[in-house]
Image (cartoon, rainbow, N blue to C red; front, side):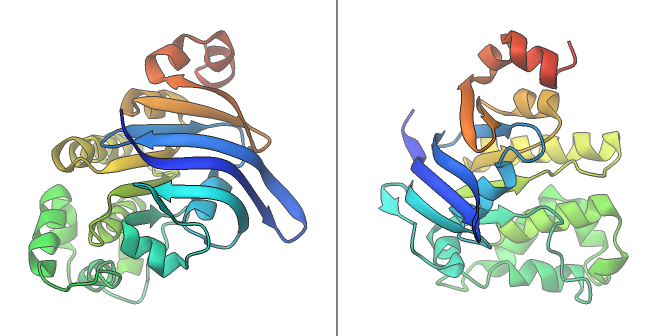
Length: 238
C-alpha cells in the first residue's frame, strides 16, 4: 500500500525532557494504523509532534510526499491533518453547531460547509439533536462525537485520534468505533489511532505499532500483532 504518512527519525521533547527517540512509522492511504503502548510510551507525544502542537520535534514527517515538519499547526491542518486530542478540546461555552463550524476554519474555501455539516450529522445523529445546546452540557460520549465531527469538518486526509474510548461507557465506545470504521471505509480517510484498549484498536486497525519509551518495539499487520505472545500477555490479557 502507498503510504500517505511517512515518519522518519522523529525525535520529540518537552523542554529538556526527550520523549521520542528516532521513531519511524507509516500510515497507508485509506487504512487505519494503531499506536499501542503503556502510559508514558510516547503515543500522545507522537500525535502532537505530527501536528506540531506543544512539543519540539526533529526528523521528517511527510504527508503525500510533502514535508510537514517546520510548518505551523494551522498549516498542517490545511494540508489535510485532523487532530482529535486527548481531553477532546471542546469549546464548552459554544453550541454544538458552533463547535462544528469552527472545524472548517482551516479550509481554504468555505464552499460546501453546509453539506459537510449535514454529513457529520448523518454520522452522529445525536449531534443534530443537540445542535443548539451548549457543548459543556453534552455527555462525555456526545463530546467525543463532537470532537471527531469537528475534525471531519476540516475535510482531513489523515485523522489523528487520541484515546477516543477514554471514560466512555462500552455501548458508546462500540458506536463510536463503528462510526470511525464507516468514515474510513466510506470516505477513505486514513486514521492514526492511539488507544489504551488494545483489543478494540486491533479490531479496527489494519496495522499497528507497539511503542516502548519513545521507540518502536514491534510493528506489523494487526492480525500478526494479535498473535504475538508479548502483545497478548501485556495488552490483550491472554
